[in-house]
Amino acid sequence: MTEPFKWDWVVKATLWTSAILFMANFFVLEEGGQWHEWAGYLILISVIVRLIWGMLTASPARLSHVAPNPAKAVRHLMDVYLFRQDKHNGHNLAGAIMVWVLWSLLIATASSGWGMETDDFWGSDWLEEVHETLANLTMVAVAIHVAAVILMTKLTRKAYLRSMLP
Image (cartoon, rainbow, N blue to C red; front, side, top):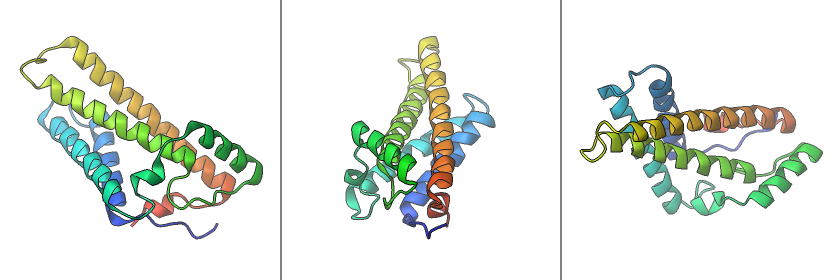
């Protein structure tokens, strides 16, 4: 496999913080419990830090480098399939769409969870349903993201996961 691109420490820290806390909230922590709430707040803070970093940095983590473009993403995926290579440093065009989907879902999930704790929505069944649906959609997006990383690694022989490891 070729030598992978390495993400900076802010990107790695915010990704792994969000990933570990989301998985803990989804599979381990008691729904509505204090630890669940705090994990949700920390996920929200982590995504916000990543977005702020994306506005400040000049690296491939810059938000303008991950602007979603579905038409270009489809062409990119077709090229990857045909030529078995991905020459992007950082997120490729399809990955850019996925990170925006993940960030949006994490923000929406955390925000709906926070909303359930406010006086205006305390005990609101519909908001709880929205929160659970968003969490489930986030898990589906995570599964697609992980599967795409594995598939892209096999197709291109590029070690994507190594770029996110310390």
